[in-house]
Length: 344
Image 1 (cartoon, rainbow, N blue to C red):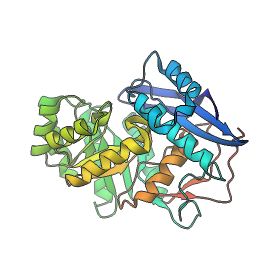
Image 2: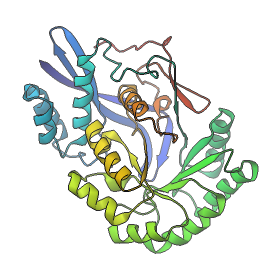
Image 3: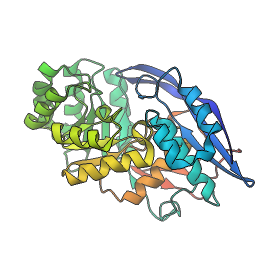
């Protein structure tokens, strides 16, 4: 088997605000495999400033993976434990290699175009008018669940935005999730959660920064609003430590980003532990290209979750790889009329 990799820079259609600043582009890497004239591809979507494998030796480890591809998946996954995005790209590429259609990794009614995945509409951080316009666009596009990234502008203005939605749409009509990306200080978080809870929100992601286990556990115990852990899961590698984290913090939900938590294998470990502790979960992409999003979506469909998933990021880039993934009325579809435009 031969393995190579290459880097690709995704360009945002418009600058996208997060708690880590404004993004205009996103680097990603692809692993290509070839065996007996059959090819496979996977994406290592390391996220600078967020991924645990945002390290100086990232590309060195990626090159090492390609050079040692014949060691096999199990050995390589163990050796790549501190490089979750490479683990995921490797899993993806090997699955791609095993299928007649290199882009159909998990054949199902979803990939046959017979079923869809419910997703949330993502509202990016920005000034009040920009966020309000995004909300209008998502609602007119038929979304019944929206996710607002908060923590970038004045909190009272963010509350006004949420109130304006609730004035028109009740919780049965529109489900609202908010994502603070760790923006709240521990000593102010509970009061802010109480104010947010007045508007019948579904949940809040990562209200305080990760690594504050005692504070987060206390917040999850006292919160009037369900808390979902996101960044908190990054860099927790062993099943023992994953179980300890969930049993210590006792969140209401966890959010799985396969690129950040070790691909399908790492995500499934979190799901199994969450379910054994009566903790809810859903899956979210992490600004991968359509190669990575395709793999995440197909896998997510097999899990048959009833909650809206966070898989609506495919349309953010000007130079994304054309794929059959289509969003319509808050659902992600696999449109068999649309072809992949990637030659590899």
